[in-house]
Length: 387
Image (cartoon, rainbow, N blue to C red; front, side, top):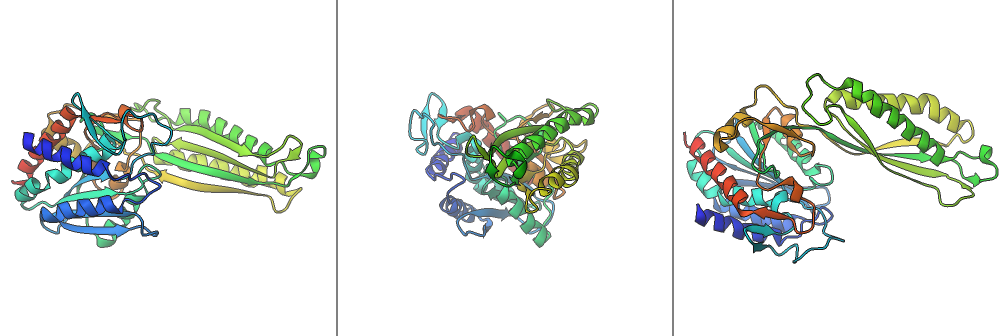
C-alpha cells in the first residue's frame, strides 16, 4: 500500500499543477486522466461543453451493463486570487504529513486515489461494472454533472451506486440540502429625485422584494419536516446582495437582488417561487407599470442543485460502511453533485479524504493519512468487485 500511496501522491501533484479554476479550461487535466484510465483498460468517453473549453470524463471498466458503481469527483477548483499562500498553490508540496496545494482536498485527492487504483480495480472487476465520472464546473453550479446525467439518460445506462469523493474526513454522508441560486432583475424608470412620482424606483421595489423574502424565510420554519436532521432543520433563504442606482438624486432605473435558498425538501422551492411569482404579478408589477408600462421584474436562475435526500434503503451507504468499517452516517450543510446522481435513481453517499474545513482556503491541504485511508477503502472495493 505504501507504493500505491506514493504513486497516488505523484499523480495528485500532476493534477494540482493543472490550474483548473472554474473560469478556465480543464481539458489538459481531463486528457491526462483519460490517458491513465485507458492504460488501465477502461473505455473512456470525453464530452465537451458548448464552448469546447471544458469537458466531462466518463470511463468504464468491466461489462457494458446496468448496476455499476460510480466513483465521482469534480475537476474544477476555486480561485486563489487575493489569498495569502505559503507556497505556490499549483505546485504541491509536502510538509509534516500534509499535502498542500489548491484542490488537494477539494477534490483532486479522491480523483488521484481512484485513478491510481484503476489498474488494481480493473483486474478485480468481474460482472459488475465500475465507472469513473469526473466533471467540470461543480464549484459554480454543478453544470458538468448535469450534462453528464443527461448523457447517461440518453444512453439509458443505469448505474446503481455512486460514491462522491468530496472531503468528509472519510465519514459517510447520506444527506445535504439543495442549493438554489437566483438573481432577480428590476427595471424601472429613471428620473430626478425631486419628482419621485414621475419615475419607478427599481431599488425601492427591490427592497420590497427582499422584505417578501424575509417573510418567506420565517414561513419556511413552520414547514420543517418532523425529526429533521439538518441544522437548521428547515429550508433557509439568504439575501446575498442588493445592487442598484448610481446617485443620491437620481431615481434608480435598475436594481438586482442576488439570493439563494437551501431546500430540505423539493416542495419548499416551489412554495417560495410560486409565492414570489404571485407577489410580483399581482402587487409589484401593476404598481410599476401604472407609471412605466415597460417596467419589468425578471428572475434569473443561476443554478438549482438538488439536495441529497437521506433514504432508509441505501446500497451505497451500506457498501461504504462495509468498506470503511464506519457505523452510521451523517448529513452536512454544504452542497455537492450527489443529488444529481440520486435523481437518476442511484443510491448515493459522499465519502472522501480531507476535511471540508480546509477547502477554499489559502494553504489548503490533504493529510497523508486521509489519503491512505481512502486507498484502503478502494482496495477493499476491489475485493468486493472480484466476487
